[in-house]
Image 1 (tube, rainbow, N blue to C red):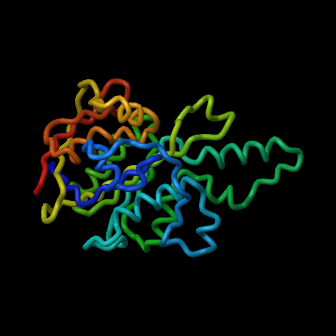
Image 2: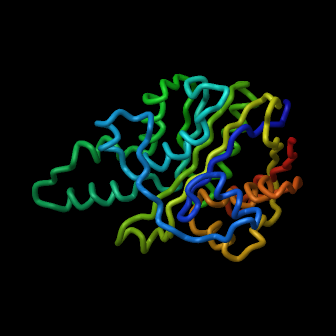
Length: 264
């Protein structure tokens, strides 16, 4: 089986890094990292009523997906999708738990509707009219690696261009004490089996080599602050033009070994 997927678009969002161009400048050392709160994102594809009801998790997923598909030669409705979140929407989970602890046990219909793990993928499929295969993955701190494998497999086996979207939002108190994701962040890749106009290409295999870290202490702090940010070593290699091997943990024993080739 052919084992190369081609990266045609990249998105990354975190505090102080509102889009890929600004993230790329920081990863290259062309701009200093300045943490700043992310403005509330208003998804372009969601109609006004759904936009008002959209949770922070859905908004983050759309922020990534819309940047990946904006002004691209392939339409969003032609893409398979892999959405991945380590924890889902813990703010909604906490509100539902609080409601169930009350005597009336009145759960918000909107919260109930949004509580399932694949809610962002569902919103996207409807809003983008994306009728292709869609997968939602949760793999704790290894969610980016697991989702990358899934998306790569979709490109290889189904021969279908695939949207990879990984995101997590910090939990509110008291859940945050048990799951201390410290910042909101999201990452996305548009993967295809076509090399034309590709940014880079990757081949993947499974190994047990130690993870690749960021060589800057600030970026390394970002890397471990959110499961989606585990993608930063790969993104930094692309941004700085350094082809080679990047190792991303898949679980406590194994890693996804990424061989990166850059395209002009």
